[in-house]
Amino acid sequence: MLDRTVQSGIWATAIKVSSRLLQILMLIILARVLAPRQFGLMGIALVSLSATRNFSKIGLKTALIQQKNENVDEYLDTAWCLEAGRGVLIFAVLFVAAPFIGDLFGEPSAVPLIRVIGLGPLLFGLRNPGIIYFRKDLEFHKEFVYQVSGGIVQFVVGVGYVLISPTVWALVFAYVSADAFKFGLSYVIHNYRPWPSFDVSIARELINYGKWITASSILYFLYSEGDDAFVGWFLSATALGFYQYAYRIADTPSSEVSEILASVSFPAYSKLQDNPAELRQALLATTRVTGFITIPMAVGIALVAPSFVPVVLGDDWIPMIRIMQLLALYGMFHSITRNFGSVWKALDRPDLLAKLAALRVACIAILIWPAAARFGIEGVGLVVVGVYAFPMLPLDVYVVSKLTDTRPVEFYREWFYPLVGAIVMFASLWQLRGLMDVTPLVELIVLVPAGVVVYTAVALLLARVSPWKIENDIRSIAGSLS
Image (tube, rainbow, N blue to C red):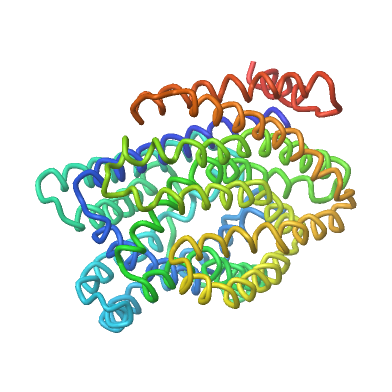
């Protein structure tokens, strides 16, 4: 199981790194051409799309992966009908509601963007349901082809269109074209052929499991993108452009790593759901590796943001530096606890996702208005980071500890050592930056590799003089690969 999980993790890493790199490159190129307000208009369309998707999500993929049966063919036609119906519903809602959404945000120019981007979920709902086996069976090499091909199409269309017509439509067509291509590709790379057949008992079984996924999905939207909607409504489309773009860059490296591990660990945990001891060991190992990678990434982003933004994005984006630094901390908290959700779902407790998310939404809702009124987008960032740090992080640890019979201190210990390494790295590079009198470009070129060297050295030292088992994990991963 370890070998297979590690190999799947490598493929999952390749998927995420390739897809996200293409997306980030596209956004960087477009940021050099488009104004922050145009990104804000696209942000309104994406928030609208995300709202309808999350409010209608019924957790079919999760339910199929969690199934103990290896063969789930008998479920696929019903799942396909449910997803197709959901896609039609999302498209219809967005098309009809677009003028009202435009009025709500005071941006009528967002209306056609919302309507066109609604084609994405329509195509997504009709894709081949057989591709669920790529994740269920840990066949991530097939998932790689499927996901990365869509990322390449998105990049080519987005960059190609903006070179011809530098408008926000480059972003819209990039997103829709990726969904259209993946719809067709799903029928090429998997031989299952769905048929419009609906079994009420199967639908009831899937929806019964997925009801908590639906609830947690709605609440996830409220706490992860409700702040976006609030910024666009309370402040402006330009402020939303800064806020969303800062979030994408600051949160992406650390959260993408944790998402890779979560995507691999969920099917692995599902296979271990009847073996508590092995599940506990796998959970701690994943927590350890996640912290080792993502904590220094988040701290590093906060450090290099003042150099990165003017060099890579341009001077128009300088106002987003402080919010980018704040959201880097959000990315750190987000990444180190993301793995817990996989455990709750694998152990048939998806209700925990919804219940904890409800508390998070309540805390943010109470604080976000006064913070935004006083400090703008930085105030919103402070609320998002602060609520995650307390009370949510301690609560997440407490709940997962109870469910897996693991002591809470074991999780904090796995985060302590990489945090020490990241703090030493930050302090060292902060001093180095004070000694340098160079351009932001040279500063960026120096700080990034220097940070990698300092953190690696400190981590190796800590692994030798403490009980931290990260060296054993690295050897196990290397052994599985060889």
